[in-house]
Image (tube, rainbow, N blue to C red; front, side):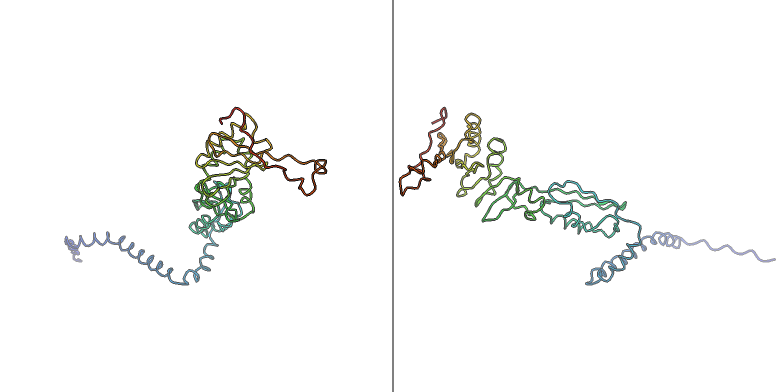
Length: 303
């Protein structure tokens, strides 16, 4: 008979502990290997010229993948053109979605005129979402012969010149003129917005010695506003317009610098051909024959 085999000896407690620890260490060792490989790849990619050498290989890999851009959605846009947005994104529908760099597109979009900040999202479903928050211009500032867009705080808003939507902003926004006119413009424009009968007749607000404002009207008249009291003066001017149609009268100057008096200078009367023929030789018939005096205050107004 063949002898019965002897059963193996029972493992010692130390051996059992080592086996358990070996099983527990396997995942940890795997993570260490992956971290080492990833770290080495990162260091390799940071070397000059590495990304350029790998770009063709990466393009081939991505080009064979089925993930493509299926839709590009943009919201929050009022002043920025669609062409500028798509140029900044740098991709079109049908391009590989993994070729799209969210960070680079965000930087290019943030550099566009009127853009305050932007959020760009890339989805593996193929959709690119762009959420734009614009910094709309508040007024046009004429300064040292140049026209620039400014925001409510008086800061310059970058623009692309007199083309496209930028041109629309230049033509529709209020115009302020002069040194230092950009910073206090918002208070004056807000006051004019409350009085549309006055605002609709104003073509420009001129800053005088960086202390006060003059309003230039479409009819050619100039309104001199008091220093530091522009807002109540505009409301008072609106009351004069409602009761006496002051802004529709043939005037060249409305002086409101004194709080208790309104001084008006009317246009000189036109000289007819008959009057010109009767004018004395050597006298310019087109010029007024006597100095122009301020018109008396409007009846019923405070003196």
